[in-house]
Amino acid sequence: LFGQIVKGLEVLDEMQGVPTGSGDRPKTDVVINAVTVTEAD
Image (cartoon, rainbow, N blue to C red; front, side):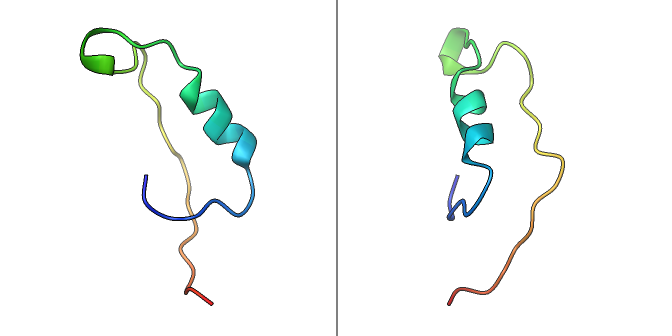
């Protein structure tokens, strides 16, 4: 992930906690349903 999380850090914590299998891939898909891209300050 490249960028900066400005709110919703708990979502990242949940993504990091997903069990992984072979090749360190998540055993179940992790899907990001929506993002907002903004200009840097």
